[in-house]
Image (cartoon, rainbow, N blue to C red; front, side, top):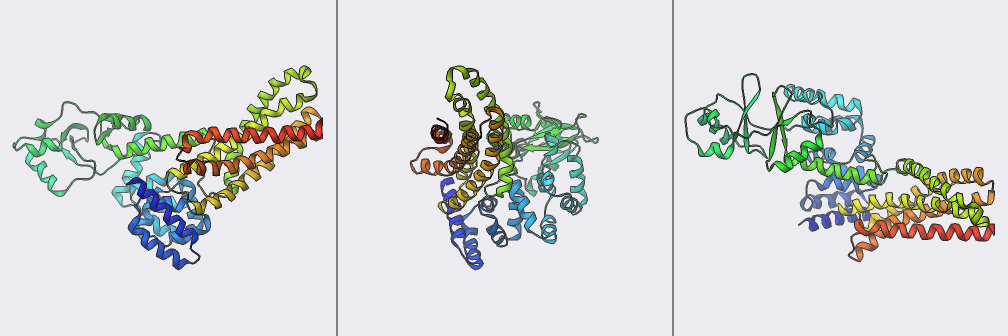
Length: 450
């Protein structure tokens, strides 16, 4: 089922990229409403180049725009806000509820956030203010307020009447509080259904009453819910006042986001970058980490330099070899991470891969030019050789271009061979960048220096 969903998304992306007129795109999106899951419409926008995004966005029904706007990545949302007028943004934000406003509060301009808060009703605005008492890293900031809260003095028969009104998703317990709002008991819905006594709810209170403190670290709280075997856990403040609940759905979402952040951070990427972020944004995000990597690469070169007397004429080339290899490896792994993530979500197809390749080559060229000049200058100051500076600068530029192309094409090749690019892509890419880097660098060095 999941494979079909990913395939459907890929087909829609291909059709949109091939389409030449807005009317064609409108017809494609009309059909896509029947084949794509609601969660895929945010992925669809992220998978399109900037010039196609607004056209596709205009075909989304109002409810779908609202859901996609909240679900999409930070960089995609920022690009969309920039493309839309303020009036269009206000119209969209006026539809959001408190949970959705909290979801994007840290990622939208302050003028839009103020408008969104102003358009909440009094009760939701109060819940928003309650959430602001806790940081975004604490569970109290991310509560679900769609629960059943009842008085501990309520009779069982009266509580049973609430069942006829329907229950919100992930509801398996009623939360009982006293007149001060302190959580005093939890009543399982199944237990309530089976009991026909006229006594109060206290007789059904569970002896085991797990709860979370609102100041609990978010990822720790998420793991606690997942391991509890419950659909949700109640959340209380330091005085045991009941504030809301933390559901299993939110817990898994937090866990997935945490894992995704670890993957992108490990590759030196930022949550502010999506598949089709501008070349300048991508180059900036990745260039910083290339600079950090440069420091470690020169440190390794410094140690190799201790053997200068032994290596004699080729010492300079030997000392600088790790710089060439390391810069190519890091640059390629950054591209590889973005591509593998996009492939896993069904966002990359044969059609947009060509555009992605062009974009990544531009990123590689921009970072290559900048860092080849920096490395060339450092090399000149270190070895006082203009020819050697030219050799390593050119090698760095060519290796970063190779890394960009390899990061896009290697996952595609592995995928065609039914080999998981997430597992083996990095190994092959590093090998390619090392070989190209050494051959270019040492080849040029041999021709120009010896």
